[in-house]
Image (cartoon, rainbow, N blue to C red; front, side, top):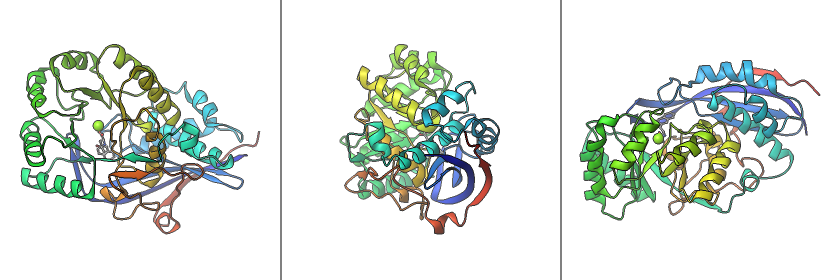
Length: 368
Ligand code: NPQ
Ligand code: MG
């Protein structure tokens, strides 16, 4: 049951179509993996940071620095994921860096103990309801076509990216085209300000499941005020970086739904604590996505199989983003994706795909 070493692997996979949000357009996914090497097993963790600090303050190069200089040195041959998390606690922020190291260690330890991540976390479902995040399109016709294609594939919920000037008409068009039964929500990625409250109130007529992160991540007070003005439930994403920020947002009534992303909160152990808190308070949660490949997607499926994940998440099929995934592809079956039930995260890179990736760092872990 030992940890012998840690490796960092880098690569890039093109997206099947550009993904436009209020903070930019992505055409490919630059990737960073952590590999935790044991005596007879290896664990993999995926870093969800983007190349540029546009979604949050973390970015891929910075994660490589933080993982190499501050996190790997904390590891011991017998470190558990729980020990790593407590040793890393004094290092402020850097949630995505911590999460990918924790995930690799968790995958390794669970493989060594012959347990699946789903079982370890307390999963109660064998498949999870799948939604899709739809980027901003060049025209309303394009949007209707793209949404139609996803619904034909069986996705159970549609999330539309919005930004100032590209919002009300977008939602009206999709609601009119696909009907009142469609599970529909929007995500602003923090693009509005409190001054837009009356404008955002116009979305109330479209019976949306939620509006996600309308205001800047640190404007909790603005979300409290907005939640009192609009009827559409407010869901927070970027603002929730830990158990404490989740509890605080709920105590202040800044939101009534939470998008849980393990990478954004420092890992699966913290994500589970947030899940348990929300379950105890009857607050719906759903699993967000960061355009993960199969390594991150497999682990997120285990998390989303917990009982409190009652809304369809952004864990889409691999094909939503990638023509070829780093792992065996995750596919949509009747609007759902199967939860891996084999040991660890239940997935690992395909050798032929990993061949295009570069091992950029190797660290030996001192025996105890
Ligand atoms: C969100 N995810 O919920 C994020 C935004 C996002 C599925 O909408 C590369 C890496 C590109 C992460 C683009 C979804 C990304 C990204 C958008 C995350 O806010
Ligand atoms: Mg979001």
